[in-house]
Image (cartoon, rainbow, N blue to C red; front, side, top):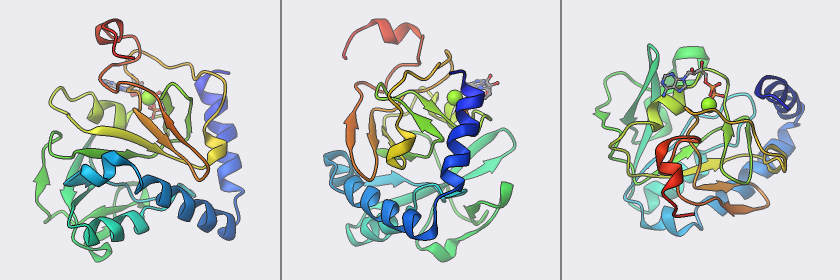
Length: 203
Ligand code: ADP
Ligand code: MG
């Protein structure tokens, strides 16, 4: 199925979740995420503010503070995203699209600072391909050549589909996908879908 109808179908299904379903799924998916070796080793992680029933990240934020990690959140700046350090949920305020963003006074961090980036998505496939809201913000940010972070897609289990997502050359693949029911390791995150790196092996 092409990206656009798949996106609409998944958004509708996610919109239909009850508060109880969202809470339960969020709790399990976040628990799974913090068991990852890549999370445990990370000194600095990037999270996202959940919108439209995306898996919550507040429990990961709380765990990361207890674990002494630095935590970054994205803010939209024109066509790009910038990441700023957050020291509590009170550092977040409604920004672009009404999504909570770190206050503009926060220090900006370069793309290569996070050891692990938790990426939201509308749909993922087991190879790590991702469909977002259709604006390409994460693809542009994650395409940065200095990035060293492990990329983890976080979603409800129904968002991880069996069929291959029709990814394009600019789409950045996830290395790991975590849901409320599964942890899928997809292979190297160093490549764009059809970029030259994807022919160099490693997965
Ligand atoms: P999403 O990833 O949110 O589902 P798409 O992958 O369909 O969205 O990308 C949306 C738009 O963003 C596309 O028109 C694409 O050309 C643009 N885009 C994505 N990544 C880049 C990039 N690295 N450089 C320039 N444009 C990009
Ligand atoms: Mg994309």
